[in-house]
Amino acid sequence: MNGPYGILQESIEDYHANPAWSNTKLKTFRLSRFKAFQLYVSRTRTPTPSKPAQVFGNCVHTGVLEPAEFDKRYLISPYDNFRTLEAREWRQDKEAAGVSVLTQEDYDRARACIDHVRADPLVQVLLSKGRAEVVFRKKLPRFDIQTRVDWYEETGVVLPMGEEAGESTGSYFCELKTLTDTTQSGDVKGVEEMFGYSCLKYGYYEQVTWAREVIAELLDPTGENQVRPAVYFIAVQSVEPFDVIVCQPKSERLAIATRQIRADLRRISNCYQSGIWNGVIEIGELARWEKYELRQANRLEIVG
Image (tube, helix red, strand yellow):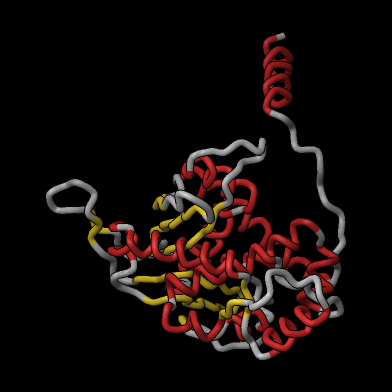
């Protein structure tokens, strides 16, 4: 096992290099246990590089949550594109030095996202206390678990929600998300509908549920008085009008994700114990109408 353990501040490179299981690794495990084994246990498979959309999202994260680091990590390219050998070699040199390169267009869009997020009144309150990029890591009997949240505040703030006394949050963490301007149909939608679609498509509910469970396990390993922090999504459109919303996931969604995550952790533990990562898996979940017909058939048999 590899520490350190507890509530930490560490670079994203150190976080990803740690063998502890994260939500990203859990998503891979659900898709392919063998791929997860190769990537995270035997380490015989090379991870895929970040996609341009991830680089843009990371850029907005830095500008909002760690503004002092923005100019150190991101640079505007003097080239309109990277089709030429000269442009590609220039970009490779900068990236080798740890600097991400953006086109002027992407840089301007990122700055617009950053400015709109930081100007939002609710966001200003949420980010008025706490710290950015906080890591939580805990040792379990057979493997470690970890999470890294965009923003964490352990005592809480009072949100100006229209009530005279406001609303106290208690401990909470925030996740900042950038959104494209379309949904699956390709139609332009409002930011609320766009974000609801993104939550389902990219597994945001599972992401924040994983974080809540890791934090709760770390702060109270006995499980007797576990208190899970509140969750706030901060979502911003990556194009005009750069609309910003603050959202909270419903408890029903978190409950479903919690059951899934706990089942996955049991499966991972079994894989470590047995050494078998591609064992027998049950399939054939009944649809709702099939469950109804089965209940009806059972009822008729009992009555008859």
